Length: 389
Image (cartoon, rainbow, N blue to C red):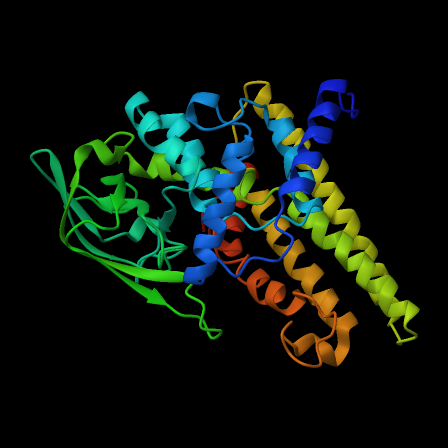
């Protein structure tokens, strides 16, 4: 095993670092959960695309750079090092994009991937329904074929990026007599389709992070079906694998948080503020865990580059990174003391940073991409071979 980078990889890192240092916005963009911030982030994505960095591991003809997954990890490390903006189209480029690469037709790849890479088209994720959250097999929204169209009825909720997105991907029950995992079809839906109504869901901070989407006899061409009709569950599980196991949460994200946590600890100690001894150990453990996750991801990438697939072990990754993210932010709030409850714009906040916002978002980690309780069931049954209760 050789844990050293090749000269070619080091050259790629140097090139990416130089480009990011020259192009990352000097001022922080507004939240992409606001209309203004959404458009600012789309402009940033177009600049990334022009520089060849929108999605480095994708083929050039689909808007990528043709790099391998190891180079993608290197780029992610440099991206977070540079403090670059969050990726507004993450549902598209990190989840749907790899799925289209895997099961899409040549026409679908040519149609959707370049527009996705540049964020000309931004995607919302439409999994959850009022009675189908972590239990996606309980999906009730229907898509009944009528000639060369699906007629869609039902509702999706908690659609990430749905308030401003152009498209939605999700599963719909194409066989009304089916139940559970069978009879579901994965469909790509333009959100400007007649019969589609998007209602933003505002958070307590007035940001529109989600939306609920209603379908009333919305007609969607069958050419927007991804994978086989009735086999949508298999397609969705491939998407979930990317979400839980590799693309959506690169290790650089957590290494950056761990680095900032260490800096916060050092600054707190240097200020003369009392710091409980156990926090020193917790900070050190968080840093080690972030590094361990990075090494494990490199191992996963080596496995994939050798022809392997991401399987049920993606659930192990999902539990690890989501609980690590929560732990790091909890620790930061303890170090900040009374200032932990201040938002960055508060008069007394000073250099408190984004720790409170990060903590609130981290609390969602054990829920989205399948609750950690569900992930533990998957691990018990599919990895450990334990019987269903």
